[in-house]
Amino acid sequence: MAKFKKKTKTEENIPTSALPDIIFMLLFFFMVTTVLREQELLVSQKLPEASQLQKLEKKSLISYLFIGKPKNTGVYGTEPRIQANDALITTNDILLWVNQEKDKLSEAERDQITISLKADREVKMGPIADIQFELREADARKILYASVGKNK
Image (cartoon, rainbow, N blue to C red; front, side, top):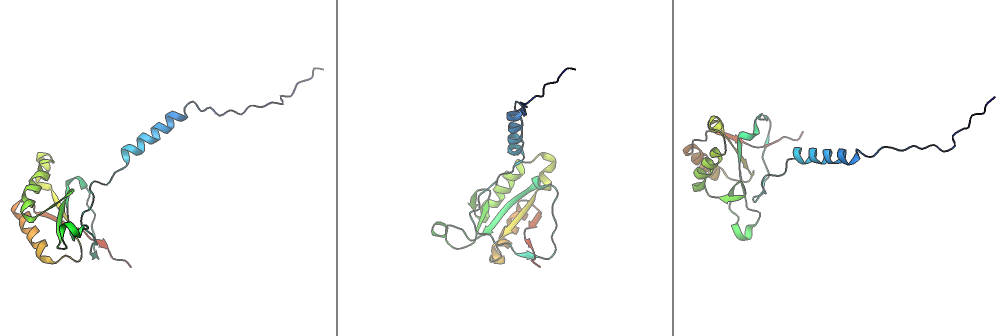
């Protein structure tokens, strides 16, 4: 009878030729899907609490106005300021800013623009009323007041 030899040396190689391709696909996927912060806040924000909140579906039609005390009080003072995109503006500049934001949208979406006011809870109603008046003059009639949910 014939004797069979047992293999004593077993090789367990894992094929790694496709590993760099997989790593680069994952890297590319996360680079494409990650949303970076669009703007740096120049004003302090502590949003008021609300009992009823509603999320919006199409966030591309929203432009943000941040209202609060400047973080750099040595340069900008302590009065509440308005931040649009990455710049501090005055109420007189709101009309120009709204028109610039509308120009970024397509013709069909320009009348659907929504302005989100993210006002600090310490800001008085006077500056907010001035902003509302300027938004009316700029024909931006959809205003969203941002807040956080109540902690239970």
